[in-house]
Length: 465
Image (cartoon, rainbow, N blue to C red; front, side):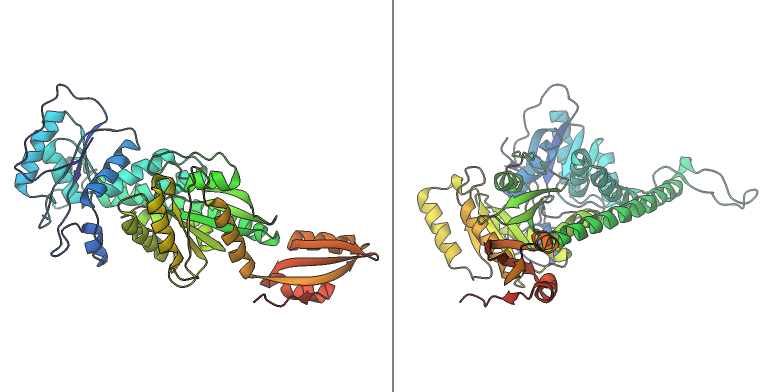
């Protein structure tokens, strides 16, 4: 359904009889910034005014609701000049939305913003319906999509941290017992305090379990370092086509769907490079604007795959009308992981979904990509059709080779352990037998350079110019 503007004077929607479970009303309460009428709250909070299309933001919020099988009865924009501390919206807006809730028979309202616990409680009282803010909705999606034990632990930890902030004093009749004696004693432990204590205990247990997960992941990464496989990580806005590209590059069958957060748990597969080399490709959770901080913290163990990666592929949906704003959102999350997108790190931009463009539009994109600095390249790709994938693989191979050293050496054909060591710890580029000796050209990490030179008398090959 098409989102529409709601300015108070718009006609009320036609009444529908009855209500069904899972029907939701999506509201986009977006503030206007002077000089930038399309900028939203996230840009205000971060101090960066970026022009974002409110209709695209609202459609994204509706897509989040559909991602957990909710039926979107209506989606509307409520322009704001000021945020009210009690209900976020003004009293008139709140009253008008009561009519919409009754007309559509919805039992859930999604507010595409961050609500305080008091605001959420007050809106639920006014509307007599469950209210979810953007953070709560994203947490619900993650809760449904987490399939591995690690993913479930991470989502539960984030959800409990969110719930702990939602505990507000609403039920004084749930006080457990009175403290002290007679009329002088105040109330004892309240239900809120008991819930907060139980949640705190559970959070502590989950954090301890996740520390074990982090330790296990470190062991896995250490094991991969012993094998000459480099790590390439996919990052990008949710629904940018990361999983489709992952399947295309690795010939895997990871779930890929035109849906926000279609995949959640990270996946690693072997990636074969054009000249026979190998790397490990990691598909990570998609990013999104206003990604809850608690989720970034909870998924840090998973996102460490990105931090440790030798090359990062930033997959962008260039057909999306808010592609530039999505790029800034991904960069913001990368900075939260202490990765500076502009610091010359091995980040390659993948401009995906070019199959949706005309020939002229593709040529224009190609000209824009050609003008980019060499240390920040962009490659036009269609993960759906495979167009541009070979050029991307060559670029990945070049980036990985730039951080490794090429050595020439000879080893006695009878030295089976030495030859085996080279195959385990280096990338063998060339190997041929000459007079009982193998002449070999290998590519090694800087960490293996000295030991290879010392053990085999290897000679570094001068860099190509």
